[in-house]
Length: 96
Image (tube, rainbow, N blue to C red; front, top):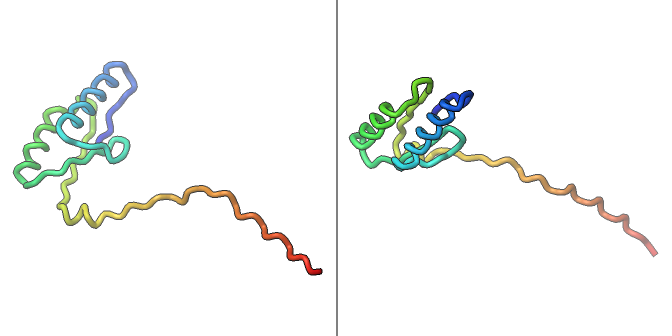
């Protein structure tokens, strides 16, 4: 998870470089400024954490959260209800 300034041309350039680095290193965007990468072992995780540490832009804030496959598997994802047209009122029955 990261928060990088984009208030100057140089800051936007640094943001783009960092994001490109993450994508090339196998991270996938989960949400805006939240990227995830599966790692098969603790050692592999350490390698990628060090790579990220070396690439953090000077004004950036990066947080790394490591979770196991089992913890990721138990993640709950919720979606809002899709707006639907309101149901039409039923027509009144006519008696003959």
